[in-house]
Length: 153
Length: 153
Length: 83
Length: 83
Image (tube, rainbow over all chains, first blue to last red; front, side):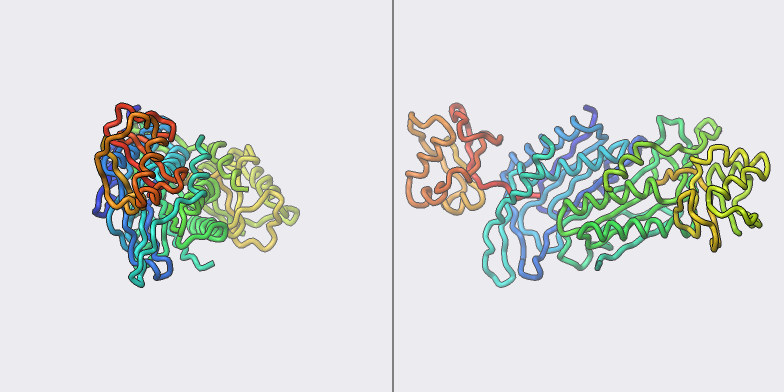
């Protein structure tokens, strides 16, 4: 496996274009770059913010493990996964995945695989703060996310 | 269908980050943005450039038709497709697709659908200029691209 | 009737477009391609494998059996290789 | 043994981490959760539905029947909701 894997957990926002450039700059063997950005939705004005808690250390390890799995499973030339933590307002970025490959099918599949696994295996938890000042409680895990993961097994 | 559809055929490069921002700026209902960028590969140094010929007018129409089909098939909040023409060097961008949706599955599926259809239905043709000064001739259509399209029917 | 050609169809025919008077018996896209193939060596070469050449009428993809009546512009080109 | 808690497990237990002396008979993750549930109302609440609480040993996901011997840090948390 000769695929650079970059994983970061950070409070600050990420720069989509910079992350894509980091995987493609100065090389001519990349034919396809797929990015996925997950954003905080405002739920029709009822959400003030999400608070993202994570397990420091384990979050990075799980993201790295999943990214390396993707790089073993598909012929990738680069894979990047960035997950934010802390308070995130509606419209802001939460998560970014970038995959680079010679061919589009591998880049698409790897990006979807990464997101399905990050959703269910990376130790992050979302708590809702509502616009009316109350707590919306912790977001519940979705069965649909577990099902999405199972298609890869 | 209340989904903004943007289609452009242009000689100049595109700005990935600007196209993503155009679909997400000032709104809080987008939860997922997928981008696909197709780049010119250098074929291990043997390729000097690709020359992309297109059918002006029909190229835009087909891209718009496919983008609107995607917006009817999946709950999208925005879809953008940009295809370059003219001489494109290894490492440069050729095509960009951006899809925005509340949920990731729709954004991923629509982006893959768009690329599969653009590959086989948008009137663009690639000619190779080799590094040794000869013409590599016209790129042949791939059966794999036709098969990729068929999975959506 | 205006005809336009792209990629290697254009190169083989030797021109990007032309206006032709189509004989009365030529009513479909396939018949038009067949008639064009009789117009000289360059056309015979361009249309030597009619199954490979695609067509569009007024900028929409059409099948070989599509009637050409009323068309303003008919295009012939190889399978697309964009993206 | 160091224990760490996240999300609503942390909120219910009322602290993010603690160091405990685990009784000799407690050998698996499930047994540890069961023992913790006996340590007071806040623990009983956090572990009231043991099937829902996930665990990690030394920052790797583990199953309920995983032995805890040799663990430096054991974490309990709800199903993940990142991404």
